[in-house]
Length: 385
Length: 147
Ligand SMILES: [Zn+2]
Image (cartoon, helix red, strand yellow):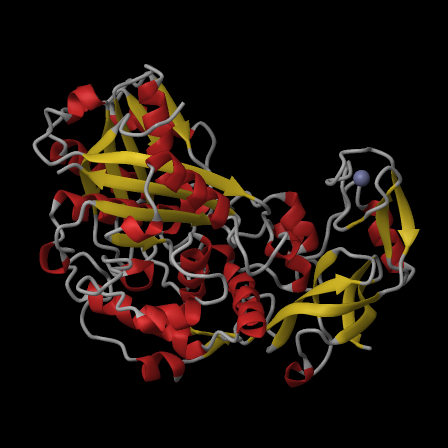
């Protein structure tokens, strides 16, 4: 049983992340990118027979997919939420493919949108976190990733300069992306290292900025994909894993379950990290990218620091990484943030990367990461030549 | 995940006069917090596989046995990792900076906790010992200090 080339993405929709919501709501943003993605796919709303939603921080609720479908006027044959944080986007892709392969539906709209503030409805955090984490001030993922970075530096000698290089190269990519929130000026390693430390050893430029935004993509059956106006972007492999929720209870703080997720994805796809033309790893923090590159097998464990210094991570470099700027420069729209890595992978493989197009790109590694390295979902995407 | 959303998302009932979030013990965790109130550190230990467990569970996460017993433990451990928070993760945590840490207990399990010490003294691998903090008359938090 494999999902290799069982479904393809043929359309995307995305808004440029922005700080002030104004009259927008999470639902209005999701409706906007859904319309855009369906039109981009050359389909009509009535063709959509599957829907996967991310539940936003800004409007948390149960029974989300049916409400969303009712609102936009879709009557699906498969509907669900995907609740794995930053891994939602990659997790949606293989779930859509699996539903299509099982014959449940033929065209799945995957959509998420969020604001950077609460609507007044508290997000329902699990009692375990409220009881054993919050009393000690562990209420923010920044603190968890800081403890990962601190331990990584202790075990492997990783430096702040190496982390900064990731933010700097990704900013270079963002400068060529009209949709990126931070695309007006380059960053330098010194600027990152001299910026304010929020939680040792993480500087403010190591940390993602919360924005409003939304992303959507449409995954369809091979039959529909072959009639697509854009080159279809095929799912070649997928793998998912979780080994903790709170980082304190992870088997390892520095080695993540990106490893089993990526191994499964590469195995299904029948390719290796060396075959990838680009990588789009979830980047809530610079350390997330470094740990992901190590655990996905792009370099030896612990060598992520020297690796990112030795390689050019820009769109024109030898290992294009987060070509849209990553969330660090693109902006993070809550639970929709991780979807931007998927839409960028699709965009690049369709050849629509504009000034940041990776030349002759046919294979992309995309990773979604939820919580504090808690949920991982890796996918391999392919443009067939 | 991102920062901003957590700030005002706390249920009102969660905030006491103490000002910061406090645990609301469940039937499973109540013995842990009751012992902390007496300034004793106790952990569950699985009678089937012998492993110590933190945080309190309905069943052993290692062998899935439900034969869990409460055992007093040494209160000694080492700092596995830590960070110095120099911003308020929520408005409630306004005394800055504070040290958030993962402490590895001598008995094996790791705990999320605070190190009560000047931040510049804290190092990975540093030996620590339990330091109970009576947050309210009803609730004591389990923190650590340099040994
Ligand atoms: Zn056991």
